[in-house]
Length: 188
Ligand code: HEM
Ligand code: HEM
Image (tube, rainbow, N blue to C red; front, side, top):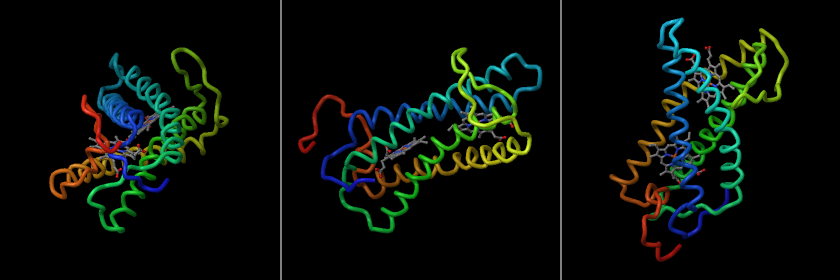
């Protein structure tokens, strides 16, 4: 990721995509939890799994676009600057969040193909990433589950860290990721 700058906030596009991604992730998790908690034969069980897949597939290009964008743009500096060890943890967390947002849709897509299903989006069949294989389906399904479930913990930690910075450290970590309503920042 590029070096920090003194601009006050992330770009409007980064901010919009960040919060839109949060909504998508909530819907992805709600859909799969509903799918898993509904009894077999329930009318909503299959649609919930389908929505999980649709939304996960929609997230993939958005996450790739965000990753490319963040690598090519400058990161607004946190004021006052946190210690170096915190900066390293933050960087590791961002890398993890991208692995989750890009890796899990790919694993989910591979799982479907390995199980012999074609992934569809709005009725359109998407190309298969791998051939049918029960052994591969098992491995990929396990990886998808482990990475997906780890998201509950790490996204929670990411959100708590943002609130900790805002309310206890009282720096601008969170404000940098909030939309500007009306008034423009003097130094952006
Ligand atoms: C970032 C996006 C995604 C996240 C965070 C995610 C997360 C999860 C989680 C937590 C589960 C439940 C695992 C369990 O407890 O057994 C799950 C199941 C599942 N996911 Fe995803 N997923 C994502 C994207 C996708 C995509 C794009 C597909 C398909 C193209 C997909 C296909 C599936 C399927 C078929 C299941 C059910 C597996 C089963 O019944 O064993 N997921 N996902
Ligand atoms: C209530 C939930 C959330 C809050 C309060 C929150 C807050 C923040 C804040 C304050 C930053 C800036 C951190 C910094 O620059 O050091 C940030 C960055 C980031 N957040 Fe979140 N976030 C939330 C949910 C999510 C979710 C669900 C994801 C994706 C799974 C996510 C992915 C990221 C990524 C990748 C960055 C790095 C900046 C970028 O690439 O645009 N966040 N978040």
